[in-house]
Length: 194
Image 1: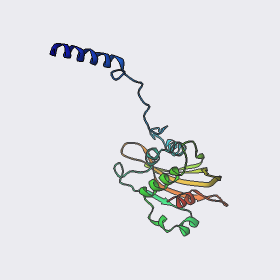
Image 2 (image 1 turned 45 degrees about the vertical axis):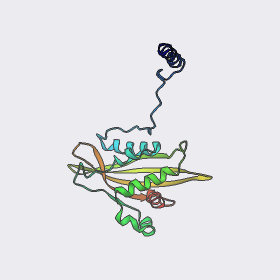
Image 3 (image 1 turned 90 degrees about the horizontal axis):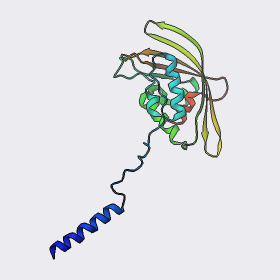
Image 4 (image 1 turned 90 degrees about the vertical axis):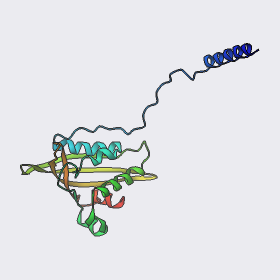
């Protein structure tokens, strides 16, 4: 009797296993990761390209990689807001990399997955400061989508002091914002979203 029960049990198990797909391989799921066009910043121009791409792609890690990191340099980051934004937002006197991270997260958290930041950056001038740093002035125009309203526009110039860190990556050590004559600048965007 036990042999018959074992035989029926074995047959039932074989039919069950062959009838379902638990041992079949399945199509792997695509990873849930943000898009990244990050390029190792071997030149100062690539830093600015990475900033633009990180905004378009809403990629915090790529954005933060554009700034000086104390793990790779003895320099520290400094943001100089426009005078108007400094008067409105007292926290600019103590702006840090954590502040950059917070503002960026707040901007992208307000956007849906299909909304895109429109950004245009063009070089105005470049001048050598010393053997190990360079200063560039870039013209920028940003449009940030808003739900049920027209996009917010930010225009001006940003003066970057960039240095190579000990990985030979160019990074921003100082960002001086200069807004256009009328309207809002990048400092206003940071202030509104901090």
